[in-house]
Length: 160
Image (cartoon, rainbow, N blue to C red; front, side, top):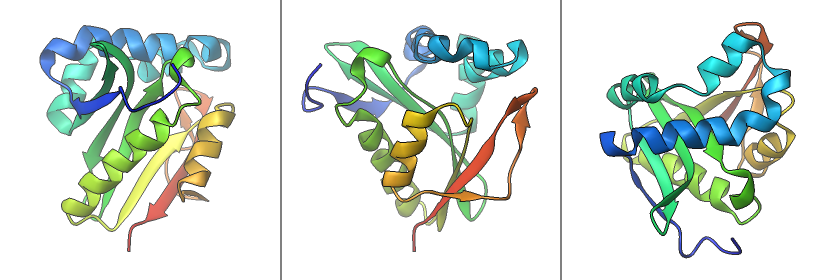
C-alpha cells in the first residue's frame, strides 16, 4: 500500500462483521502480550460483539479492492462522541488511513452537533497516540484508567 486514494471509507454493514472481527484481531495481535486476556478480548470483539457495537452507533470500514484495511466506531455520549475500535492493519499503516478514519468520525460528530470527541487508548500504542496528538487530541484525566487490568488513558478533542 502506498496511498489512500484507492481506499474507500463507508459505513459497515452486518455482512462486514466477520472481516471487521478479523481486522481488529490482526491489527492488535502484535500487542497481545501487553494486554490482559480479558482486555485483549474486549479490544478484539467477535462478530457478535461488533453487531452490538453497530447497534450502539456507526461503524466505518476502510477497504481497497474489497479488502478491509481499517475501521473505527463511535458512540453518542451526549455532548461528545466517543471513538472506539479504531484499527488499521499493520501493512496499511503509514499512508494516512488512520487520519482519514479520524476525519470521517470528526465530520460525523460535527454534523450531529457534538462539541467534543473522546477516546481511550493504551500507553503502549505509541504510533496511534502520535496520530491522535497530530489530529488535535490531548490527554485528559477523566475516563476509565484500565480495561480488565490493561492500562488506559483518555484523550479528547474540542470541536468548537
